[in-house]
Image 1 (cartoon, rainbow, N blue to C red):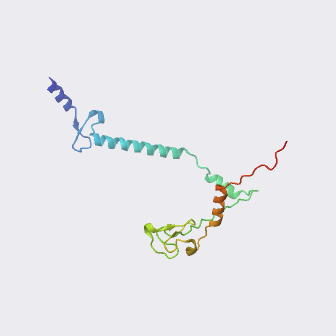
Image 2 (image 1 turned 45 degrees about the vertical axis):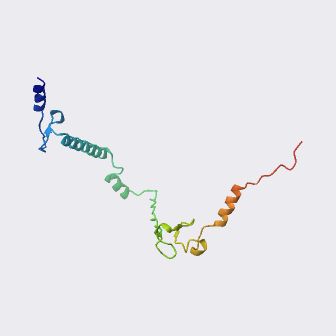
Image 3 (image 1 turned 30 degrees about the horizontal axis):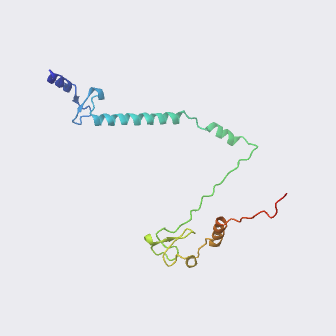
Amino acid sequence: MAEEQNWQEASNHTPCANNCGFLGSPTTFNFCSKCYEDHCLKDQNMSQAKLAVEKSLSQQPETSFSSISSRATAPSSDPLVVVKTVPEVAVKSQPRNRCAKCNRRVGLTGFTCRCGITCCGTHRYPEQHGCTFDYKTMGREAIAKANPVIKAVKLQKI
């Protein structure tokens, strides 16, 4: 009896609707598991694309052609202000694996200075590469922060 039930369950399976060679199931619209997953992803992508198109179509454009032409023909009392943007000039920086002074390849042995450049062993000292970092001010600030001034009250008031 159990063998007949297994045989009847197996008869519910039909070849895949995509003709991939595997068996499909009525619960998966006669697709095999792989083709059914692809079918679901395709439907999901289609619904997302349709939603995006509907959303873009539902938004009204900010200006119409008639309002632009009426603005062009009608003189206005407010002059239009044209704002020009200046493109930012990209600063050309030295590659991080080259010495900024002699252009020697430094690899892992390069020294990064506090002024932001990478130097080889010869130019690692501030005097050698013309460092622009102010070490004196940094030292003074570090000492002032580490050693605060403590003052006692000169006279106590009665």
